[in-house]
Amino acid sequence: MILQRYAALLALVCAVAGGRPAAAQTSPYDGVLGAVEANNRALEARRHMADAQTLEANTGKYLENPSVNYERMWGKGGAKNNEWTVAQPFDFPAVYFNKNKLARLRGVQFGHEYAAFRRGILLQAKELCIEIIYLRRQQALFDEQLSNAERLSAAYDRQFETGQVNVIERNRVEIELVDARTAARLNASDLASAEERLRNLNGGLAVDFTATEYPVLAPLASFDAFVEEYLAASPDLRLGESAVEVARRDISLSRAQSLPKFEVGYRYEGSVGGRDGFNGFEVGLTVPLFENKNTVKRARAEARYAEAQLESDRLDARTVVRQLYDREAVLAGSMARYAEILASQKTVDYLNRALDAGQMPVTDYFVELTTFYDNQLSYLQLERDYHLVRAQLASMDL
Image (cartoon, rainbow, N blue to C red):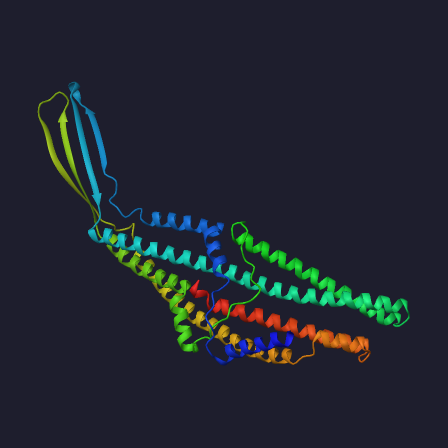
């Protein structure tokens, strides 16, 4: 049974390492990621924050409030005079045009910020799923090891009572039992902790995730094709591009705000009780000589910063993808080699039969048994690390 299992593993990892297409399979993570996206409290808070930021970006792009003034004056002989003024200030049309553009760009920017945050939460959930599968597979191995240690311990207790084995051999078996029991309990604790963290990501709600096998993954495309697709879909880089667009539009707005402001209004002046009054209009002009000094220079400096930061982020992202891509190839190759070794390794049943028949000393038995389980544990770790790397490389699809 074990030989068949590792023969199948060998065929799978060779297909991945060798670049042959793998069969399509529904990912066991999809249901979990959908639930986390719907129930995660941090994501919900971030959605509300994005809505609030978008509304804030759309304030301040309209006309200023109109003003209404009333004056009443007294003169000699009881003469009285009233004056009413209604005025509306406004900027050059270019100001409103650029404010509207800037509001839309900032709305897009907030959307990219949310997308980047969402991707981080979903990647965290997917990595936890991979960790849980790893711990479940490891738990099955530890339980098998514990069951074998308990069987061996019971047999050696009976043989010790009849004098067939000495105290050294019996103690060696008891130490193996303690080690196996400790490993199984610690792994069970780690598994419970990982499942609790996944529930927390799901807003404290139970998660329907029972998988014990990883999905079959198709081979990666060539690096050049893959990295271009990765960078094109990166929400972090889309956020950087939005920051550049916002900064450039801010330059246009700063230039427009350096133009004069106008004020147009209606004015009425008349005496109290008098029949005659004066009606007219007023026009005002505000020249921004001092208030907006250096605003265009500031906007240009921020635009240069945003452009340089975006280019830096692109280079960093390409470097990270290169490291992950190369690591994926190394792990796939190591998995293939380990699968070959495990497929040809002596089984626990074989070792037990040899020990029971007296064909193998207990010291040699435990050396072989330890090697057997260490190799399987190493393979499980490689398998987990491989799927964690693939999860990071596929994070743009979340």
